[in-house]
Image (cartoon, rainbow over all chains, first blue to last red; front, side, top):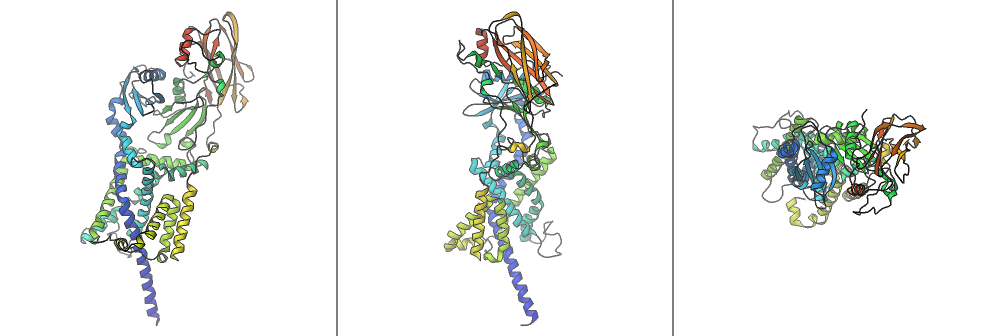
Length: 459
Length: 161
Protein backbone atom coordinates (compact mmCIF):
# COMPACT_ATOMS: atom_id res chain seq x y z
CA UNK A 1 0.00 0.00 0.00
CA UNK A 2 1.52 3.31 -0.92
CA UNK A 3 1.23 6.49 1.02
CA UNK A 4 -1.43 8.02 -1.13
CA UNK A 5 -3.75 5.06 -0.65
CA UNK A 6 -3.28 5.11 3.09
CA UNK A 7 -4.21 8.75 3.21
CA UNK A 8 -7.24 8.02 1.10
CA UNK A 9 -8.51 5.34 3.48
CA UNK A 10 -7.95 7.55 6.53
CA UNK A 11 -9.88 10.32 4.87
CA UNK A 12 -12.75 7.95 4.14
CA UNK A 13 -12.98 6.64 7.72
CA UNK A 14 -12.91 10.19 9.02
CA UNK A 15 -15.67 11.19 6.64
CA UNK A 16 -17.76 8.21 7.57
CA UNK A 17 -17.37 8.83 11.28
CA UNK A 18 -18.11 12.55 10.83
CA UNK A 19 -21.20 11.79 8.81
CA UNK A 20 -22.39 9.14 11.24
CA UNK A 21 -22.02 11.70 14.04
CA UNK A 22 -24.03 14.13 11.94
CA UNK A 23 -26.72 11.50 11.40
CA UNK A 24 -26.91 10.77 15.12
CA UNK A 25 -27.40 14.41 16.00
CA UNK A 26 -29.97 14.67 13.25
CA UNK A 27 -31.77 11.60 14.54
CA UNK A 28 -32.05 13.01 18.06
CA UNK A 29 -33.05 16.43 16.80
CA UNK A 30 -35.66 14.75 14.62
CA UNK A 31 -37.34 12.68 17.35
CA UNK A 32 -37.09 15.35 20.04
CA UNK A 33 -38.55 17.84 17.58
CA UNK A 34 -41.48 15.65 16.61
CA UNK A 35 -42.34 14.91 20.23
CA UNK A 36 -41.84 18.34 21.75
CA UNK A 37 -42.79 20.75 18.95
CA UNK A 38 -46.53 20.68 19.82
CA UNK A 39 -45.74 21.61 23.41
CA UNK A 40 -43.37 24.36 22.34
CA UNK A 41 -46.09 25.84 20.14
CA UNK A 42 -48.50 25.70 23.07
CA UNK A 43 -45.98 27.42 25.35
CA UNK A 44 -45.29 30.08 22.74
CA UNK A 45 -48.99 30.78 22.14
CA UNK A 46 -49.94 31.00 25.82
CA UNK A 47 -46.75 32.92 26.53
CA UNK A 48 -47.56 35.47 23.83
CA UNK A 49 -50.92 36.11 25.48
CA UNK A 50 -49.62 36.16 29.02
CA UNK A 51 -46.96 38.72 28.07
CA UNK A 52 -49.71 41.28 27.70
CA UNK A 53 -51.42 40.46 30.98
CA UNK A 54 -51.13 44.01 32.38
CA UNK A 55 -52.80 45.57 29.35
CA UNK A 56 -55.40 42.82 29.00
CA UNK A 57 -56.41 42.91 32.67
CA UNK A 58 -56.56 46.70 32.65
CA UNK A 59 -59.18 46.50 29.92
CA UNK A 60 -61.04 43.49 31.30
CA UNK A 61 -61.24 44.71 34.88
CA UNK A 62 -61.39 48.46 34.38
CA UNK A 63 -64.71 48.67 36.22
CA UNK A 64 -63.12 47.02 39.25
CA UNK A 65 -59.87 48.98 39.14
CA UNK A 66 -60.89 52.58 38.55
CA UNK A 67 -62.18 54.92 41.24
CA UNK A 68 -62.63 58.69 41.27
CA UNK A 69 -60.16 60.23 43.72
CA UNK A 70 -61.67 62.23 46.55
CA UNK A 71 -60.33 64.30 49.40
CA UNK A 72 -60.32 61.71 52.20
CA UNK A 73 -59.68 58.01 52.21
CA UNK A 74 -61.35 55.85 54.79
CA UNK A 75 -59.13 53.68 56.95
CA UNK A 76 -57.95 50.26 55.87
CA UNK A 77 -59.61 48.78 58.95
CA UNK A 78 -62.95 50.27 57.94
CA UNK A 79 -62.54 48.90 54.40
CA UNK A 80 -61.78 45.45 55.68
CA UNK A 81 -64.68 45.61 58.13
CA UNK A 82 -66.98 46.42 55.21
CA UNK A 83 -65.78 43.25 53.47
CA UNK A 84 -66.16 41.21 56.68
CA UNK A 85 -69.74 42.40 57.04
CA UNK A 86 -70.51 41.28 53.48
CA UNK A 87 -68.65 37.98 53.61
CA UNK A 88 -69.01 36.84 57.24
CA UNK A 89 -67.85 33.28 56.51
CA UNK A 90 -64.74 34.11 54.53
CA UNK A 91 -61.33 34.69 56.03
CA UNK A 92 -59.40 37.79 55.05
CA UNK A 93 -55.99 36.84 53.71
CA UNK A 94 -54.64 39.95 52.03
CA UNK A 95 -55.12 43.68 51.72
CA UNK A 96 -53.78 45.79 48.88
CA UNK A 97 -54.19 49.56 49.21
CA UNK A 98 -53.84 50.38 45.50
CA UNK A 99 -50.84 52.01 43.84
CA UNK A 100 -52.46 55.28 42.75
CA UNK A 101 -55.21 57.62 43.92
CA UNK A 102 -57.44 56.40 41.10
CA UNK A 103 -57.03 52.71 41.94
CA UNK A 104 -59.45 50.71 44.06
CA UNK A 105 -58.16 48.77 47.04
CA UNK A 106 -58.36 45.01 47.11
CA UNK A 107 -59.20 42.56 49.87
CA UNK A 108 -58.43 38.95 49.21
CA UNK A 109 -60.88 36.55 50.83
CA UNK A 110 -60.81 32.79 51.09
CA UNK A 111 -63.41 30.19 51.91
CA UNK A 112 -62.90 26.46 52.07
CA UNK A 113 -63.92 26.20 48.41
CA UNK A 114 -62.33 29.11 46.62
CA UNK A 115 -60.61 32.44 46.95
CA UNK A 116 -61.48 35.73 45.35
CA UNK A 117 -60.69 39.41 45.34
CA UNK A 118 -63.12 42.03 46.60
CA UNK A 119 -62.57 45.51 45.15
CA UNK A 120 -63.41 48.48 47.37
CA UNK A 121 -63.67 52.17 46.74
CA UNK A 122 -61.20 53.52 49.35
CA UNK A 123 -63.03 56.87 49.53
CA UNK A 124 -66.53 55.59 50.21
CA UNK A 125 -65.88 52.11 51.58
CA UNK A 126 -68.35 50.71 49.08
CA UNK A 127 -67.71 47.31 47.57
CA UNK A 128 -67.26 47.65 43.81
CA UNK A 129 -67.34 43.98 42.97
CA UNK A 130 -65.93 40.53 43.54
CA UNK A 131 -63.72 38.57 41.18
CA UNK A 132 -63.15 34.88 41.81
CA UNK A 133 -59.61 33.63 41.14
CA UNK A 134 -61.07 30.85 39.02
CA UNK A 135 -62.76 33.39 36.77
CA UNK A 136 -59.57 35.23 35.89
CA UNK A 137 -58.74 34.41 32.29
CA UNK A 138 -55.05 35.18 32.79
CA UNK A 139 -54.92 32.63 35.62
CA UNK A 140 -56.11 30.01 33.16
CA UNK A 141 -53.54 31.05 30.58
CA UNK A 142 -50.84 30.89 33.23
CA UNK A 143 -52.06 27.46 34.30
CA UNK A 144 -51.77 26.14 30.76
CA UNK A 145 -48.39 27.77 30.28
CA UNK A 146 -46.96 26.53 33.57
CA UNK A 147 -48.64 23.16 34.07
CA UNK A 148 -50.92 22.35 31.12
CA UNK A 149 -53.81 22.60 33.62
CA UNK A 150 -52.67 19.23 34.94
CA UNK A 151 -51.12 20.13 38.29
CA UNK A 152 -47.83 18.57 39.26
CA UNK A 153 -47.71 16.18 36.31
CA UNK A 154 -48.29 19.09 33.95
CA UNK A 155 -45.58 21.09 35.67
CA UNK A 156 -43.09 18.26 35.17
CA UNK A 157 -44.08 17.89 31.50
CA UNK A 158 -43.54 21.60 30.87
CA UNK A 159 -40.18 21.35 32.61
CA UNK A 160 -39.27 18.37 30.48
CA UNK A 161 -40.27 20.25 27.35
CA UNK A 162 -38.12 23.21 28.40
CA UNK A 163 -35.13 20.95 29.07
CA UNK A 164 -35.56 19.07 25.82
CA UNK A 165 -35.84 22.37 24.00
CA UNK A 166 -32.25 22.93 25.13
CA UNK A 167 -31.33 19.57 23.57
CA UNK A 168 -33.09 20.75 20.39
CA UNK A 169 -31.14 24.00 20.43
CA UNK A 170 -27.77 22.26 20.92
CA UNK A 171 -28.41 19.61 18.25
CA UNK A 172 -30.06 22.18 15.96
CA UNK A 173 -27.08 24.52 16.17
CA UNK A 174 -24.79 21.65 15.22
CA UNK A 175 -26.93 20.77 12.20
CA UNK A 176 -27.17 24.42 11.19
CA UNK A 177 -23.43 25.10 11.47
CA UNK A 178 -22.05 25.29 7.91
CA UNK A 179 -19.97 22.20 7.15
CA UNK A 180 -18.29 23.59 4.07
CA UNK A 181 -15.97 26.50 4.57
CA UNK A 182 -16.48 29.63 2.51
CA UNK A 183 -20.05 28.80 1.66
CA UNK A 184 -21.11 32.39 2.42
CA UNK A 185 -24.06 33.55 4.49
CA UNK A 186 -26.74 32.04 2.27
CA UNK A 187 -28.52 29.18 3.99
CA UNK A 188 -26.78 30.18 7.22
CA UNK A 189 -27.91 33.66 8.08
CA UNK A 190 -30.14 34.37 5.08
CA UNK A 191 -32.59 31.87 3.58
CA UNK A 192 -31.88 30.81 -0.03
CA UNK A 193 -34.99 31.74 -1.97
CA UNK A 194 -34.01 30.72 -5.53
CA UNK A 195 -32.45 27.30 -5.14
CA UNK A 196 -35.53 25.15 -5.31
CA UNK A 197 -38.26 24.22 -2.89
CA UNK A 198 -36.22 21.65 -0.98
CA UNK A 199 -33.54 24.08 -0.04
CA UNK A 200 -36.04 26.82 0.73
CA UNK A 201 -37.95 24.50 3.05
CA UNK A 202 -34.76 23.62 4.90
CA UNK A 203 -33.76 27.28 5.18
CA UNK A 204 -37.23 28.25 6.36
CA UNK A 205 -36.57 26.08 9.43
CA UNK A 206 -32.85 26.37 10.02
CA UNK A 207 -32.24 30.07 9.37
CA UNK A 208 -35.02 31.55 11.56
CA UNK A 209 -34.21 28.89 14.16
CA UNK A 210 -30.69 30.27 14.38
CA UNK A 211 -31.96 33.82 14.68
CA UNK A 212 -34.24 33.05 17.61
CA UNK A 213 -31.86 30.64 19.36
CA UNK A 214 -30.50 33.17 21.82
CA UNK A 215 -33.94 34.47 22.69
CA UNK A 216 -35.42 31.01 23.04
CA UNK A 217 -32.57 29.85 25.24
CA UNK A 218 -33.06 32.97 27.33
CA UNK A 219 -36.77 32.28 27.81
CA UNK A 220 -36.04 28.66 28.74
CA UNK A 221 -33.30 29.51 31.21
CA UNK A 222 -35.32 32.30 32.83
CA UNK A 223 -38.40 30.08 32.98
CA UNK A 224 -36.73 27.01 34.45
CA UNK A 225 -36.16 28.49 37.94
CA UNK A 226 -39.94 28.59 38.49
CA UNK A 227 -40.41 24.97 37.55
CA UNK A 228 -41.52 22.58 40.25
CA UNK A 229 -38.68 20.08 40.19
CA UNK A 230 -35.49 21.54 38.76
CA UNK A 231 -36.46 25.07 39.75
CA UNK A 232 -37.48 24.22 43.30
CA UNK A 233 -34.26 22.30 43.92
CA UNK A 234 -32.12 24.92 42.24
CA UNK A 235 -33.70 27.69 44.31
CA UNK A 236 -33.35 25.72 47.55
CA UNK A 237 -29.67 25.09 46.95
CA UNK A 238 -29.09 28.75 46.07
CA UNK A 239 -31.03 29.96 49.13
CA UNK A 240 -29.15 27.61 51.47
CA UNK A 241 -25.81 28.82 50.11
CA UNK A 242 -26.72 32.46 50.71
CA UNK A 243 -26.73 33.04 46.96
CA UNK A 244 -30.41 32.95 46.11
CA UNK A 245 -33.60 34.53 47.31
CA UNK A 246 -33.70 34.96 51.09
CA UNK A 247 -35.98 32.32 52.65
CA UNK A 248 -39.77 32.79 52.48
CA UNK A 249 -39.73 34.60 49.13
CA UNK A 250 -39.56 31.39 47.10
CA UNK A 251 -38.97 28.46 49.44
CA UNK A 252 -38.46 28.34 53.18
CA UNK A 253 -40.34 29.80 56.12
CA UNK A 254 -41.04 33.35 57.17
CA UNK A 255 -39.92 34.34 60.66
CA UNK A 256 -42.51 34.11 63.44
CA UNK A 257 -43.86 36.78 65.76
CA UNK A 258 -41.70 36.48 68.85
CA UNK A 259 -44.31 36.40 71.58
CA UNK A 260 -45.32 33.78 74.06
CA UNK A 261 -48.92 32.67 73.95
CA UNK A 262 -49.50 33.82 77.52
CA UNK A 263 -48.64 37.40 76.54
CA UNK A 264 -51.32 37.52 73.88
CA UNK A 265 -54.81 38.74 74.79
CA UNK A 266 -57.38 35.99 74.54
CA UNK A 267 -60.68 36.67 72.85
CA UNK A 268 -63.64 35.53 74.96
CA UNK A 269 -66.33 33.76 72.95
CA UNK A 270 -69.39 33.60 75.18
CA UNK A 271 -71.96 36.23 74.36
CA UNK A 272 -72.93 37.54 77.78
CA UNK A 273 -70.20 36.72 80.28
CA UNK A 274 -66.47 36.71 80.38
CA UNK A 275 -65.70 33.02 79.91
CA UNK A 276 -61.94 33.34 80.34
CA UNK A 277 -60.02 34.73 83.33
CA UNK A 278 -59.54 38.48 83.20
CA UNK A 279 -55.79 38.05 83.24
CA UNK A 280 -56.01 36.15 79.97
CA UNK A 281 -57.83 39.03 78.37
CA UNK A 282 -55.03 41.32 79.42
CA UNK A 283 -52.27 41.01 76.90
CA UNK A 284 -50.97 42.10 73.53
CA UNK A 285 -53.41 42.65 70.70
CA UNK A 286 -52.44 42.42 67.03
CA UNK A 287 -51.34 45.64 65.37
CA UNK A 288 -54.12 47.21 63.33
CA UNK A 289 -53.93 47.01 59.57
CA UNK A 290 -53.75 50.84 59.57
CA UNK A 291 -50.52 50.65 61.57
CA UNK A 292 -49.18 48.12 59.10
CA UNK A 293 -50.06 50.36 56.14
CA UNK A 294 -48.24 53.28 57.74
CA UNK A 295 -45.20 51.10 58.51
CA UNK A 296 -45.18 49.97 54.88
CA UNK A 297 -45.06 53.59 53.76
CA UNK A 298 -42.31 54.44 56.24
CA UNK A 299 -40.33 51.47 54.93
CA UNK A 300 -40.59 52.84 51.40
CA UNK A 301 -42.46 49.89 49.91
CA UNK A 302 -43.35 50.18 46.25
CA UNK A 303 -46.91 51.61 46.12
CA UNK A 304 -48.17 48.37 44.56
CA UNK A 305 -47.54 46.50 47.83
CA UNK A 306 -49.95 44.06 49.42
CA UNK A 307 -50.23 42.97 53.06
CA UNK A 308 -50.66 39.30 53.91
CA UNK A 309 -52.65 38.94 57.09
CA UNK A 310 -51.51 36.35 59.65
CA UNK A 311 -53.86 33.46 60.30
CA UNK A 312 -52.50 32.26 63.66
CA UNK A 313 -51.08 33.85 66.83
CA UNK A 314 -47.45 33.28 65.80
CA UNK A 315 -47.90 34.51 62.24
CA UNK A 316 -46.49 37.72 60.79
CA UNK A 317 -47.82 40.50 58.62
CA UNK A 318 -45.97 40.23 55.33
CA UNK A 319 -45.56 43.23 53.08
CA UNK A 320 -44.76 42.25 49.53
CA UNK A 321 -44.41 44.07 46.26
CA UNK A 322 -43.62 42.62 42.85
CA UNK A 323 -43.74 45.62 40.56
CA UNK A 324 -42.69 45.65 36.91
CA UNK A 325 -39.00 46.07 37.66
CA UNK A 326 -37.18 43.46 39.73
CA UNK A 327 -35.06 46.16 41.44
CA UNK A 328 -38.19 47.45 43.21
CA UNK A 329 -39.22 44.10 44.68
CA UNK A 330 -39.48 43.83 48.44
CA UNK A 331 -40.72 41.40 51.06
CA UNK A 332 -40.85 42.60 54.67
CA UNK A 333 -42.08 40.48 57.57
CA UNK A 334 -43.54 42.39 60.51
CA UNK A 335 -44.24 41.17 64.01
CA UNK A 336 -47.99 40.69 64.25
CA UNK A 337 -48.21 42.58 67.58
CA UNK A 338 -45.50 45.22 67.62
CA UNK A 339 -45.07 45.83 63.90
CA UNK A 340 -41.30 45.34 64.36
CA UNK A 341 -39.41 44.53 61.18
CA UNK A 342 -38.38 40.88 61.62
CA UNK A 343 -36.89 40.50 58.15
CA UNK A 344 -36.41 43.04 55.40
CA UNK A 345 -35.68 41.44 52.05
CA UNK A 346 -35.31 43.77 49.10
CA UNK A 347 -33.70 43.15 45.74
CA UNK A 348 -30.42 44.46 47.16
CA UNK A 349 -30.54 41.75 49.87
CA UNK A 350 -30.93 38.90 47.37
CA UNK A 351 -27.87 36.78 46.68
CA UNK A 352 -26.29 37.05 43.24
CA UNK A 353 -28.20 34.06 41.90
CA UNK A 354 -31.43 35.43 43.41
CA UNK A 355 -30.86 38.76 41.67
CA UNK A 356 -30.28 37.06 38.34
CA UNK A 357 -33.35 34.85 38.76
CA UNK A 358 -35.53 37.82 39.81
CA UNK A 359 -34.36 39.88 36.85
CA UNK A 360 -34.87 36.85 34.61
CA UNK A 361 -38.46 36.56 35.80
CA UNK A 362 -39.38 40.16 35.04
CA UNK A 363 -37.65 39.91 31.65
CA UNK A 364 -39.41 36.59 30.95
CA UNK A 365 -42.76 38.16 31.85
CA UNK A 366 -41.97 41.18 29.71
CA UNK A 367 -42.44 43.74 32.49
CA UNK A 368 -38.85 44.83 33.15
CA UNK A 369 -38.58 47.16 30.14
CA UNK A 370 -42.25 47.64 29.40
CA UNK A 371 -43.58 47.59 25.85
CA UNK A 372 -40.20 47.04 24.13
CA UNK A 373 -39.63 44.03 26.38
CA UNK A 374 -43.07 42.67 25.53
CA UNK A 375 -42.55 43.13 21.80
CA UNK A 376 -39.15 41.44 21.76
CA UNK A 377 -40.52 38.49 23.74
CA UNK A 378 -43.52 38.33 21.41
CA UNK A 379 -41.17 38.20 18.40
CA UNK A 380 -39.31 35.28 20.01
CA UNK A 381 -42.60 33.46 20.66
CA UNK A 382 -43.75 33.96 17.07
CA UNK A 383 -40.32 32.77 15.91
CA UNK A 384 -40.66 29.61 18.02
CA UNK A 385 -44.04 28.90 16.43
CA UNK A 386 -42.61 29.47 12.93
CA UNK A 387 -39.64 27.20 13.58
CA UNK A 388 -41.77 24.44 15.11
CA UNK A 389 -44.27 24.56 12.27
CA UNK A 390 -41.64 24.77 9.54
CA UNK A 391 -39.74 21.89 11.13
CA UNK A 392 -42.87 19.77 11.12
CA UNK A 393 -43.56 20.76 7.49
CA UNK A 394 -40.00 19.88 6.57
CA UNK A 395 -40.52 16.38 7.99
CA UNK A 396 -43.89 15.95 6.24
CA UNK A 397 -42.37 16.82 2.87
CA UNK A 398 -39.24 14.71 3.26
CA UNK A 399 -40.84 11.71 4.91
CA UNK A 400 -40.95 8.55 2.83
CA UNK A 401 -44.30 6.81 2.36
CA UNK A 402 -43.47 4.17 4.93
CA UNK A 403 -41.56 4.74 8.15
CA UNK A 404 -40.75 7.85 10.12
CA UNK A 405 -37.95 8.97 7.84
CA UNK A 406 -35.48 9.30 10.67
CA UNK A 407 -31.82 8.90 9.85
CA UNK A 408 -30.44 5.54 10.96
CA UNK A 409 -28.87 5.31 14.37
CA UNK A 410 -25.17 4.41 14.22
CA UNK A 411 -23.45 2.21 16.84
CA UNK A 412 -22.74 3.90 20.15
CA UNK A 413 -18.96 3.79 20.00
CA UNK A 414 -18.80 6.06 16.98
CA UNK A 415 -20.81 8.71 18.78
CA UNK A 416 -19.22 8.76 22.21
CA UNK A 417 -18.92 12.54 22.13
CA UNK A 418 -22.61 12.86 21.55
CA UNK A 419 -23.34 10.51 24.42
CA UNK A 420 -21.09 12.61 26.61
CA UNK A 421 -23.11 15.73 25.71
CA UNK A 422 -26.31 13.84 26.53
CA UNK A 423 -24.90 12.73 29.88
CA UNK A 424 -23.93 16.30 30.74
CA UNK A 425 -27.39 17.56 29.83
CA UNK A 426 -28.91 14.64 31.72
CA UNK A 427 -26.94 15.51 34.84
CA UNK A 428 -27.72 19.23 34.65
CA UNK A 429 -31.39 18.55 34.03
CA UNK A 430 -32.32 15.31 35.79
CA UNK A 431 -35.68 15.19 34.03
CA UNK A 432 -33.84 14.97 30.71
CA UNK A 433 -31.70 12.26 32.23
CA UNK A 434 -34.75 10.42 33.45
CA UNK A 435 -36.41 10.66 30.06
CA UNK A 436 -33.18 9.46 28.42
CA UNK A 437 -33.31 6.37 30.61
CA UNK A 438 -36.89 5.79 29.51
CA UNK A 439 -35.94 6.27 25.84
CA UNK A 440 -33.05 3.83 26.23
CA UNK A 441 -35.23 1.27 28.02
CA UNK A 442 -37.98 1.51 25.40
CA UNK A 443 -35.36 1.19 22.67
CA UNK A 444 -33.61 -1.73 24.34
CA UNK A 445 -36.64 -3.67 25.54
CA UNK A 446 -39.24 -3.03 22.84
CA UNK A 447 -37.99 -1.52 19.61
CA UNK A 448 -34.89 -3.67 19.12
CA UNK A 449 -36.98 -6.83 19.54
CA UNK A 450 -39.84 -6.02 17.19
CA UNK A 451 -38.84 -5.99 13.54
CA UNK A 452 -41.76 -3.89 12.28
CA UNK A 453 -41.14 -1.16 14.81
CA UNK A 454 -37.45 -1.34 14.10
CA UNK A 455 -37.98 -0.77 10.43
CA UNK A 456 -40.55 1.96 11.02
CA UNK A 457 -38.28 3.92 13.34
CA UNK A 458 -35.18 3.05 11.33
CA UNK A 459 -33.45 1.98 14.51
CA UNK B 1 -18.11 -0.79 24.45
CA UNK B 2 -21.68 0.13 23.67
CA UNK B 3 -23.02 -1.68 26.72
CA UNK B 4 -20.52 -0.08 29.06
CA UNK B 5 -21.25 3.41 27.78
CA UNK B 6 -24.96 2.86 28.17
CA UNK B 7 -24.51 1.38 31.61
CA UNK B 8 -22.50 4.38 32.67
CA UNK B 9 -25.12 6.71 31.24
CA UNK B 10 -27.97 5.02 33.05
CA UNK B 11 -26.29 4.70 36.44
CA UNK B 12 -24.96 8.26 36.33
CA UNK B 13 -28.37 9.64 35.57
CA UNK B 14 -30.11 7.67 38.28
CA UNK B 15 -27.63 8.90 40.86
CA UNK B 16 -28.03 12.56 39.94
CA UNK B 17 -31.78 12.55 39.59
CA UNK B 18 -32.33 10.92 42.97
CA UNK B 19 -29.62 13.01 44.58
CA UNK B 20 -31.22 16.27 43.54
CA UNK B 21 -34.74 15.40 44.59
CA UNK B 22 -36.05 16.48 47.94
CA UNK B 23 -33.64 19.31 48.60
CA UNK B 24 -35.31 22.00 50.69
CA UNK B 25 -34.49 25.29 52.36
CA UNK B 26 -32.79 24.82 55.74
CA UNK B 27 -34.04 26.59 58.84
CA UNK B 28 -30.85 28.60 59.29
CA UNK B 29 -30.75 29.88 55.71
CA UNK B 30 -31.94 33.32 56.86
CA UNK B 31 -28.57 33.91 58.54
CA UNK B 32 -26.98 34.31 55.13
CA UNK B 33 -29.13 37.32 54.33
CA UNK B 34 -29.92 40.71 55.85
CA UNK B 35 -30.59 40.06 59.54
CA UNK B 36 -32.84 42.53 61.33
CA UNK B 37 -32.48 43.58 64.95
CA UNK B 38 -36.10 44.12 65.97
CA UNK B 39 -37.03 46.12 69.05
CA UNK B 40 -39.24 44.53 71.64
CA UNK B 41 -41.00 45.93 74.64
CA UNK B 42 -42.01 44.60 78.01
CA UNK B 43 -44.98 46.39 79.54
CA UNK B 44 -45.43 47.13 83.23
CA UNK B 45 -49.07 47.77 83.88
CA UNK B 46 -50.51 48.50 87.31
CA UNK B 47 -53.07 46.07 88.69
CA UNK B 48 -56.05 48.27 89.47
CA UNK B 49 -58.97 46.58 91.17
CA UNK B 50 -61.08 49.69 91.63
CA UNK B 51 -61.18 52.96 89.73
CA UNK B 52 -59.70 55.87 91.67
CA UNK B 53 -60.35 59.53 90.82
CA UNK B 54 -57.10 60.91 92.23
CA UNK B 55 -54.41 58.27 92.29
CA UNK B 56 -51.60 58.41 89.71
CA UNK B 57 -50.57 55.03 88.31
CA UNK B 58 -47.21 54.35 86.78
CA UNK B 59 -47.02 52.64 83.36
CA UNK B 60 -43.66 51.34 82.28
CA UNK B 61 -42.09 49.94 79.17
CA UNK B 62 -38.70 48.28 79.00
CA UNK B 63 -37.23 48.47 75.55
CA UNK B 64 -35.04 45.65 74.24
CA UNK B 65 -32.92 45.16 71.17
CA UNK B 66 -30.44 42.34 70.59
CA UNK B 67 -31.11 41.09 74.15
CA UNK B 68 -29.93 44.39 75.62
CA UNK B 69 -32.01 47.10 77.25
CA UNK B 70 -32.12 50.14 74.97
CA UNK B 71 -30.87 53.28 76.67
CA UNK B 72 -31.58 56.74 75.27
CA UNK B 73 -33.99 55.55 72.63
CA UNK B 74 -34.72 57.96 69.83
CA UNK B 75 -38.27 58.29 71.15
CA UNK B 76 -40.68 56.41 73.40
CA UNK B 77 -44.24 57.72 73.41
CA UNK B 78 -47.27 56.36 75.24
CA UNK B 79 -50.93 56.65 74.55
CA UNK B 80 -53.73 55.22 76.66
CA UNK B 81 -57.42 55.11 75.91
CA UNK B 82 -60.56 53.42 77.04
CA UNK B 83 -62.13 50.96 74.60
CA UNK B 84 -65.50 52.72 74.66
CA UNK B 85 -63.86 56.04 73.82
CA UNK B 86 -64.83 57.84 77.06
CA UNK B 87 -61.26 58.50 78.15
CA UNK B 88 -58.18 59.26 76.16
CA UNK B 89 -54.58 60.25 76.92
CA UNK B 90 -53.02 61.22 73.60
CA UNK B 91 -49.52 60.36 72.59
CA UNK B 92 -46.90 61.84 74.90
CA UNK B 93 -43.19 61.23 75.49
CA UNK B 94 -42.20 58.96 78.37
CA UNK B 95 -39.34 59.59 80.81
CA UNK B 96 -36.44 57.20 81.04
CA UNK B 97 -36.74 56.45 84.74
CA UNK B 98 -34.14 53.70 84.78
CA UNK B 99 -31.69 52.75 81.99
CA UNK B 100 -33.88 51.23 79.28
CA UNK B 101 -37.11 51.67 81.28
CA UNK B 102 -39.50 54.37 80.11
CA UNK B 103 -42.58 55.44 82.06
CA UNK B 104 -45.47 57.82 82.45
CA UNK B 105 -48.00 58.35 85.23
CA UNK B 106 -51.73 58.56 84.63
CA UNK B 107 -55.00 58.54 86.54
CA UNK B 108 -57.51 55.78 85.89
CA UNK B 109 -60.81 57.23 87.05
CA UNK B 110 -63.12 54.84 85.19
CA UNK B 111 -63.55 51.08 85.25
CA UNK B 112 -63.50 48.94 82.15
CA UNK B 113 -61.40 47.86 79.18
CA UNK B 114 -58.34 49.94 78.31
CA UNK B 115 -55.58 49.97 75.72
CA UNK B 116 -52.04 51.19 76.05
CA UNK B 117 -49.89 51.69 73.01
CA UNK B 118 -46.17 52.39 72.95
CA UNK B 119 -44.49 54.01 69.98
CA UNK B 120 -40.75 53.53 70.19
CA UNK B 121 -37.77 53.92 67.91
CA UNK B 122 -34.07 53.28 68.24
CA UNK B 123 -31.24 52.67 65.78
CA UNK B 124 -33.59 52.84 62.81
CA UNK B 125 -35.93 50.16 64.21
CA UNK B 126 -39.46 51.03 65.22
CA UNK B 127 -42.34 49.35 67.04
CA UNK B 128 -45.87 50.20 68.08
CA UNK B 129 -47.33 47.40 70.18
CA UNK B 130 -50.72 47.69 71.88
CA UNK B 131 -51.72 45.95 75.07
CA UNK B 132 -55.18 45.40 76.46
CA UNK B 133 -55.79 45.80 80.22
CA UNK B 134 -58.69 45.98 82.62
CA UNK B 135 -59.44 48.41 85.43
CA UNK B 136 -61.92 47.00 87.93
CA UNK B 137 -64.69 45.17 86.13
CA UNK B 138 -65.67 45.00 82.47
CA UNK B 139 -68.94 46.53 81.34
CA UNK B 140 -71.41 44.77 79.04
CA UNK B 141 -70.29 47.11 76.28
CA UNK B 142 -66.64 46.14 76.84
CA UNK B 143 -67.59 42.49 76.51
CA UNK B 144 -69.28 43.22 73.23
CA UNK B 145 -66.18 45.01 71.98
CA UNK B 146 -64.03 42.05 73.01
CA UNK B 147 -66.30 39.47 71.44
CA UNK B 148 -66.68 41.48 68.25
CA UNK B 149 -62.98 41.04 67.81
CA UNK B 150 -62.94 44.78 67.29
CA UNK B 151 -59.51 46.31 67.02
CA UNK B 152 -58.68 49.03 69.53
CA UNK B 153 -60.71 51.96 68.28
CA UNK B 154 -59.00 55.30 68.32
CA UNK B 155 -55.35 54.30 68.58
CA UNK B 156 -53.39 56.69 66.45
CA UNK B 157 -51.75 55.10 63.48
CA UNK B 158 -48.09 55.44 62.72
CA UNK B 159 -46.02 58.22 64.17
CA UNK B 160 -45.93 61.88 63.41
CA UNK B 161 -42.30 62.87 63.23
